[in-house]
Amino acid sequence: MKGANAGKLLIVIFTMTLALIGAAQTNTKYQGVSLVTAGDISYPPHARAAGMVTLELNVDSSGTLQRAQAVRDIPPLTRAAQDAVHQWKFQPAKKDGQPVAGVLRVNVVFNPFNPSDVSIPNKPIPPPENAAANTTRVFQPPDVRSAKYAVYPPDTVASGTVILNVQISPDGSVQDVKLLRGVGPLSSAASKAAKGWQFTPAAYESKPIASHEIVAFVFVRPEIGTM
Image (cartoon, rainbow, N blue to C red; front, side):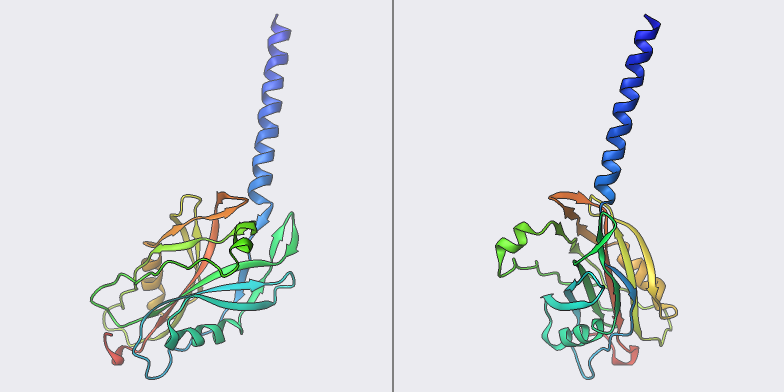
């Protein structure tokens, strides 16, 4: 009798082990595009606009950026964001350990100096022109549901671009924020703001997964004032 119970226990343990291995393979078989190096994004001279531009980057299996499509567009600011990301370097997505073409979203916040309302207007991303292509895409990147501007630290005269890698959990909450490019005291202000953002999670084969998205805060020169 004891031998039979021991055999059943071994079968249960073996089955659970296989399930865990299968789950791990499912969760790790796809890794999204990663940003390797990034440079400054210029706030266009004389621009009085502020807000968030979202770019969808198509990166091929060699890590080369093929297209930077604006899916949230602010005409005076979008071109500055697109021109900048074409100078960045990427690591391609991987499936089962092999490099493949992939998509990465970059949210570029043109941050005014201490706005009275820190909530960023956030228009929903319109459906793609080719809806069939969207429904057949295996990986769906995360999307911003709510976002806030960063508040300038007291007495700062700094300006420039802070770039963050925002880790997003399968429920859409921010899990971690990693600094990729900093600008003195503005780095902590940007990180603090991004930690309060909320996302629609990424999906792989229609199942929510952990992912990441790039958030860049472009801080205007303080002397320009609040917009």
